[in-house]
Length: 189
Image (cartoon, rainbow, N blue to C red; front, side):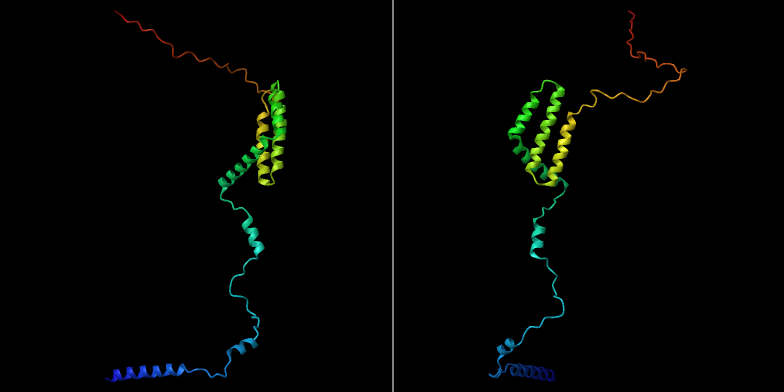
């Protein structure tokens, strides 16, 4: 019974405190006037959040193309190269240079004309692009095409090194004898 009386008294006391806390404020209190008079003072502490970059920095970051890997970069370069090639092939001077190279009568003349054609062709392609990566790859392709035109073994340079003499006591190498001759088999009847 004592416990029930204690519980009831605690509930009554807490109810009275709650009712007393709900008293209305006197009408002379004006909360809005104090807010108008108070001026915000700058806090000497730095802000709690992280420092964010400026919008111009964000724009520069997002405008840069992202690399998806070496294979993706290679495919992107190849795509741009094919677009340049398609635009350049129909150029009148490039077509004239190709026709002139194909009309050559000798192999040497044709190789020289093809060098001129590749110079014109890749010069037009590099003029159409502003990308430095594409220009470097165009130079590599141009070097590869012109490298195919060189024929270093047509007229070899003489060998300036002297051959080493063989000692006079060694015999000359022998020819291998025919080991696989068919032997005729004779059957006795």
